[in-house]
Length: 255
Image (cartoon, rainbow, N blue to C red; front, side):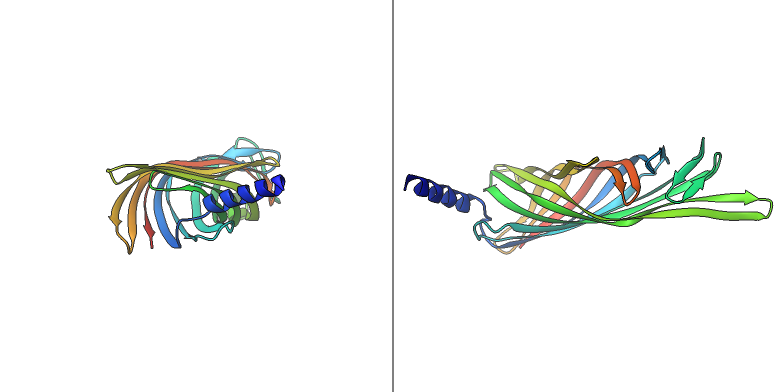
């Protein structure tokens, strides 16, 4: 009986804390001015293509509810686009193509992903919140290399592309600390994975300010720093060690 009572007590505590306060919908987006750096290639070698800095977009929607033990849902979309060029110091293999020494090779990195996250609110009040969950990151895109090859018969284009289509699991955590009487909140959130030669993270830290706060809708403006690392080992024959990082500005609306 004591064990049954203990289990019932723990279940009651868990069902009280692991839930949202009320039914709510969150919509948000951001413009991210980031710096891209790193290498990509195949299993034998990777090259720095002097990737250029770009502005990226990201959007999300989240659904929270008061039902015990049933996780909340967050869906987020992020696009990562950049390109670069380098002159090869040696022969370089990429998928089924061999690019020769001294060739000027252009790289086009165009990868997006959608995060499907199930999470629980372990704490949720005006001063402190903490979310914990699991994310399925669905990659979709491609990486293309191309070079102009001049021969006695003329100029041709040599190119090859690797499709990036896979789903990887990641850990999701988020926290928010309210600063009383200021309308300001400090927050951090991210997804993390280090498994099977893949090391990925995607986190942001920032401050948000309440522009609108009433019974119908809340609207915050967010400013902060975001970093994404893609250290991939044989993801559809693609190998990368690339990082995107920089400042962002965004907004979140809560109905």
